[in-house]
Figure 1 (cartoon, rainbow over the protein chains, first blue to last red):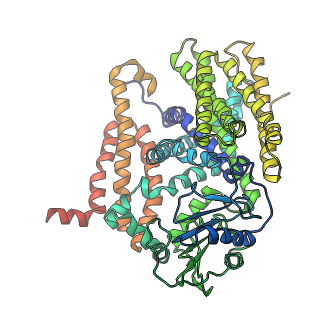
Figure 2 (cartoon, rainbow over the protein chains, first blue to last red):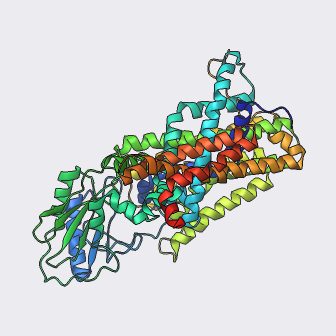
Length: 517
Length: 100
């Protein structure tokens, strides 16, 4: 063997290879995760039939109740998703139907609304943690990538100690140096965010990823673990809302107006913090009404919690008990990842931080190509890397925009419309890969960035032409897309200046801060 | 590491073995360490399990980084072998049950 490498050298090798090989998956995970911060808003954008009627959840609950009473009086359960600040959608489902099988209602007239069948913002959310693979496999692949992210981050910190020493002999102006600076700056600036978002992402699925403790202490019985975590909640979910819940034999009794339960829920959780109402055995003496909060009424992720009332007398039967410290810790970690708390300022902060994470991963991938391009002319592996870089970084941006475009361009009444949108997303993404294989890297970068810029800049126009009304959420998405379009356009504009100077030139020349003018 | 490896096939095998020991051996080590930690923590069963689970990612991360950068492959193998005593601590009641 040759001379053994130093710790910094071997860490550098680990950082390069782990970062490169998992970097493509990580970029896709981080970009879709960043978009998923606004999943509900994108949902709204993708359903232009929905208009904001500022109806308020109390009135909406009563409207939905009237429709359910008239159309499904004998169902064993009703669930009503209420309009919130993030979504004007009022939707009902009966007998434990899953999400997606629900019926959207007009919040004023109470009549069913014809809303186009669309993937919605939920697509980005699901892609973020499964990469659109079969769910369990996808969760494991994303978990593996997340561990690789931690390995890359920590090995990066260890190498960076050395770079910090180099700082004092720093000389500006090498293109590769500039990419390195960009990579380092985006990494160091938000290091706590990168570490937090990756670790909390793993923590959400910790029972799945590391079942050792459950296997050792509970004989592998996960349900026993969950029951012990929150015994009161486990007792609640034992009854009620399942698809197979047996029809109750209790005598008939009128259900109180659901709006008043929503009012009580708002008094408990805060204004605008009620997301849904469910009713078991409506119209019978043992009717139970559960009022559920939005996920972000506090940092702790309150998924599955709620206030349960007697539907006939209106008495409060059950309220969530404070979680024990260890469970609260897990829920806060999950809440930090889901970014549902703190309203819109916090959402924008997460969105911007997520973009910086994407920039760090993307600049790392490009840095590898820039470095290798200097060393070798005909390197097949480098060719593969460059093509994947183009189609994962620029190509995924094009595909995400194509999904939004297909949402408006496909006829609203098309059969299997959501699948057509899915085909548009993956079809365009595949096309960017073929394009990247066909064109020289610089041209591929430039052309795909230009396409992304045009699609993003023209998105507001498409929105105005294809939707009847507009509102603040759609305007925010349109303007954010236009801003992204400017960034894509600026980058695309920068590319040709460099390709003219030949392949060994850096892709971008960024003068480092503090450099001599 | 990678550059010398490219020069001969045996070095590639050594590298591959090292990666397998880091990723799979590291997972086995972490699994056993998590079980042992959950068993040893003097808290309620649920609390001990939750703390051990949340700590497991740090254990795995440390093991992988150490296994990929330490000089001697034998030392890494020794680290992977530490799975057995840790598993014995974590699963001793099940172990006794099995021996009976």
